[in-house]
Amino acid sequence: MQEIWTEKYRPRKLDEVIGQTDIVRRLMAVVERRNIPHFLFAGPAGTGKTTCALALARELFGEEGWQDNFQELNASDERGIQVVRTKIKSFSRAAPLGGADFKVIFLDEADSLTTDAQAALRRTMERYSQTCRFILSCNYSSRIIPPIQSRCSVLRFSPLSKEDIRKYVNRIASSEGIDVTEDGFDTLMYISGGDLRKTVNILQVAASFSERIDSDTLFSTASVARPELVSDMMTKALNGNFKGAREVLMKLVTEAGLSGEDILSQMHKELYNLPLPDQTRVHLLDAIGEADFRLIEGSNERIQLEALLARIQLLSSKDR
Image 1 (cartoon, rainbow, N blue to C red):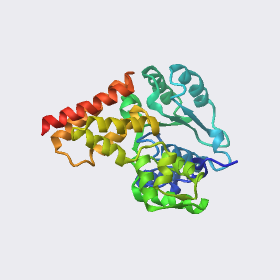
Image 2: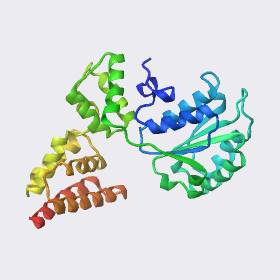
Image 3: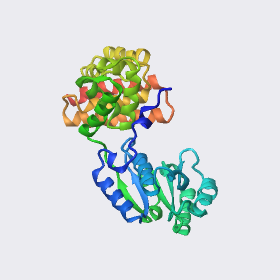
Image 4: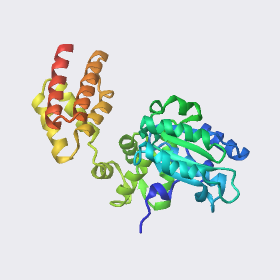
C-alpha cells in the first residue's frame, strides 16, 4: 500500500529538519547536554513543529525505545480539563523506562485547550517536572496563558523559504521518479502558502494523475481557482462591470466548487497584485474582512459574495 508522503519523508533526525536552522541548533545542544526544559513551539502550520518534537524524542531516547518514554496528544481532540487530570497526569507521574532520566509529553495544538485545562496543566508541569518534560505546540502563542509561557522555553518557527521548500520537493521528486516543472513549483508555492505538509500532500495527489507535475495538473487536482480568474473577477467589479464579475464568481462556485471562504482567501491574495491606489486597496481589504466575518457567522455564501462584488464596484466609483 502506498505510504503517505508526509510520513514517508518526514525527517527522523534533527539535522535533517529544513528551514529552522537556529531552532535545530538549540535543540541539538539540549540533546547533547541531556538537560531539556519545557518547550513551547509556536508558529504557522507545516513549518516543522511536530517533526522537531518527534526527532528530539528519537535523539534523546534512541530509535528503539523512544516510544516508551514519549506520548503525543492532540489537544484539539480532547481539549477539556479532564484530559489533563487523567491521561496527562497518569503519564507524567509514572517513572521513566529503560533508564531514561525523564519522559516527554508532546501536546499538539495546545492553543485549543480551554483556559481551565491550561490552568490545571500549569500545576501538573510544576509537580512532575522531575519525571516529565512537556513540549507544547501551537499556532498562536497568545492563546496560551502567561503562566504556562513563563514555564517554557519558547521557540518560534518561521515560515519556510522558497528555496528550502524547493530542496525538499526536489528530493521527493527524485525519489518518486516525477518531474516538477518550474511553473508547477510556483503553483505549489501559491496553493500551499509555504505550508510544507500541504505542499507534500498536494504533490502526492498530483503525482497519482501524472508523472509530470505542471501548473495545469495542480490546479485540476487541488480544487483551487487560477489566480487570473480571481483577478479578472475583481478587475471587472472595479471597472463597473458587475454582471461580468458575477459570471466569473458563478464559475468559481459551480464549476470549480470553491467555498466562499476559499474565494475570499484568494481575493485577499490577489488584492496585493492588482495595480490599485493604497486608498482603494485599504477599502477593499476592509470589505473582504467584513464578508469573511459574515460567512464565519453563518450568512448565505452566494449572497455575501455578490454583495462584496457590489461593494467593490461602489467603492471603486467613490475612489475615482
